[in-house]
Length: 344
Ligand code: GTP
Ligand code: MG
Image (cartoon, rainbow, N blue to C red; front, side, top):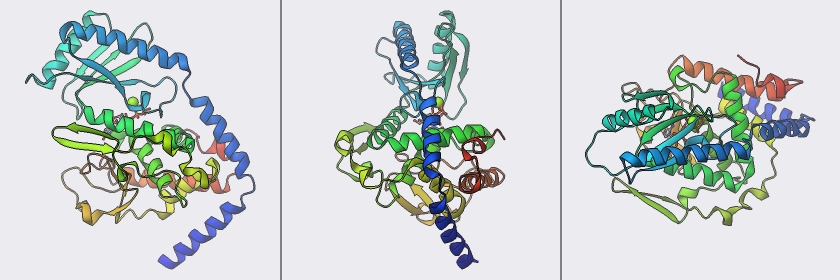
């Protein structure tokens, strides 16, 4: 069985190399990418909303600060996304729930709409909608690691533009195909971006380096643990230039990897080490509680955290079928740039 499937893999590689219109496809995908980039006015509006919210919360908590994180700050956000905000404030022993309830009260009395405190979520937040800009926003409290992983993603994006291009297309595909919904057991956008980074780290020659494996030029201490990595990315601008793989090819190779090459039974992908770690080594071989580890994506900083933990025995099947469909569409379909994103 194994031999047959590796023979099949080799045949597939030959065939894609023979797909004559891969450059035309690259062209199509690049124009989709361009059309998804948010305009500068939108970024401006987000910043203004952030500033006005900060002014408002400073009346109650003078030292509090608001930061954008997630896709509006990591450069992987498309137009008209909701924004993710983290409020940092000194720990005076007040529980997060109490802070969030107070925050909701303040926002409500300032005429922000759809204000809702979700105090029991895994990451407790207050949701709101600004009636002026129509921007929806989630605010969490002191989630400093999320700010650090946002910076890591943003820094990787500056090294080689193909990361941002690949991740935009993959996120767009995942949203179109309904496999970007953690509450239905499929993967978060954050997980997809990590999959793209890992994939580009493992090309030969590599398109992305391993920032956490280099001398740390940026270090933060959170709850007495140091987190750091090399962040002088302007020095790495040419890193991937020796590899000239096009975005059309890389997109196919990404889906081909997750459809036919990834070892779901044994492997964990790790951006932290730019490699594969065995499930055994991480003790992710058994189901513990709700964590089934059916697809394993190590968080770069919270190394005990598997971003695939949301995936269950039903959704893993859906995911893998979608990876196969995407790989096959890119390889054989006469019009892949339409078929790939067909609503499910
Ligand atoms: P959009 O789909 O465009 O909103 O992308 P996003 O990057 O904002 O996605 P997402 O909601 O998946 O993640 C928001 C941020 O939460 C990430 O960028 C991370 O900084 C942080 N985060 C940390 N751990 C997790 C996790 O386990 N799951 C998710 N979803 N986010 C995490
Ligand atoms: Mg988001």
